[in-house]
Image 1 (cartoon, rainbow, N blue to C red):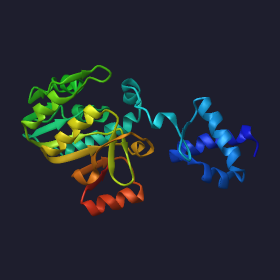
Image 2 (image 1 turned 30 degrees about the horizontal axis):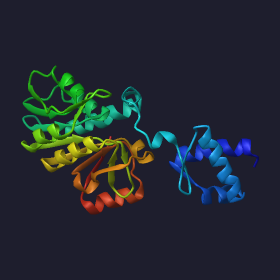
Image 3 (image 1 turned 90 degrees about the vertical axis):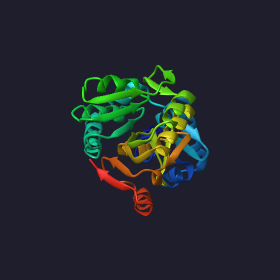
Length: 252
């Protein structure tokens, strides 16, 4: 296959699989490793892929997507996930909602709940739930991340450490087949870990696209989550992990 046809197919394979390897592309196209390495270098130089050891990934899978762009991604799916999450949360309980566009969708679905005590480190969620007269809303404080209204850092952690929650709903930037929950911001990760430690029931709300993304910092394991709410079948390895760990999986 000539290079002009091979390169678009390489990009499509990266989009499907999240990563392409030199060895895999050599077998697929029947060309030499040197030819594939040249293709990957050119695709990297043009910004279409990012080189990693032994292959390449899509640039968007290793960098945080901007907040406004994240709000537009998989909107209908997020609403479905949010509705199912909200159904797991009863009236008259305490709940923590952390940073994320999916947790913001959960906040919308909690507008009709009664007797809630909601604690959040997300300014957007506080604004959403201010419309629910039957909910008491507490904002943790912390360092304001202007890009998405998140509150992070030691002050946020210190507030959370003084409290216990009946439920917590968390999101993430990426998921691994082995059950690792990943994110980008070390300060946010520290807050998320504290939320998990101080909650009786932890719900992870994440659509299946997160299995196609990468992030550098480990938050926790899905084994630390009580309920995983997602939109479609998990990769087999992750499904097996959830079954072994006792994590309930709900499909929106």
